[in-house]
Amino acid sequence: MNRQTLRTTIAGAAGAIELALDRPQGPARGLALVAHPHPLHGGTLDNKVAQTLARAWVQLGFVVLRPNFRGVGASGGQFDGGRGETDDLQQVLEHHLQVLRAELGDAPQLALAGFSFGAYVAAALAARLRDAGRAPRHLTLVGPAVVNFALPPLREPQALAERLLVVHGEADEVVPLGAVLDWARPQQQPVLVAPGSGHFFHGMLTPLKDWVCAWHGSAA
Image (cartoon, rainbow, N blue to C red; front, side, top):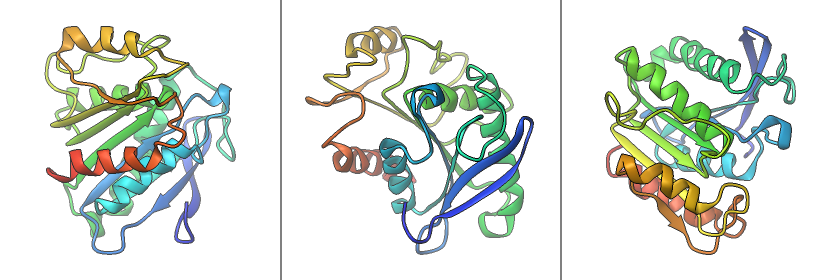
C-alpha cells in the first residue's frame, strides 16, 4: 500500500498466512483487520477496496492487518467457503494481539472490516468474538455478499459491534442493492449508498475512505 507496508507470514491451520501490516504515524489507538473479496474471483489483500479500508484505519490511528486468504499469494491451503478463512482471520488477530501487546496494551480497540466475501468473513469473526464476550468496537461491511453467503444476524442476540457501518454501491452489478436492502430492512440496519457506484467502487474510493473515517472516527 505504501513504502511502510510490511509483508510477512505467520503460521496457520492450513499453512502459512501471508499478510500486510501498516502502522499509523503516531502511537497506535487499536488494531484493525481487513478481509479481501472472494479468492476464486481474483480477490487478494491488494484489492483496491481492501487497500482503501486499510488506509482509512491507518488514518484513524490503528495498526492494520490484511491477510491473504487460503490459496492466495503466499498463503497455504485451499479455499474453504468461509469457514477456514474465518479461522485464519482469527489466527491473525490472536497472534498479533500477543505480538503487539507492549504497543497496544491488554485490551486494545478492535476494528473488523471486509469487502464482498470479506464482509461475510469479517461479520462471521465478529459474531464469534461477540459470543465469546469480546465483541469488536467497530465493524465495516462494504458490498456485503448477502446473495451467496448467510451473514450472521447483526443484532441478535446482541450487536456484532458497538459501531456498525454498511456501505453499498447503488449500481452494484455483483450484489444488487435491492438484495442488501432486503437483508438490512428486517434488522433495521441503515445502508450508506454510494450513488452510481458499482461493486468495486471505481471512482468512489476516496469518498469511501472519507465515509469510513467520518463514521468510525467519531467513536475511535
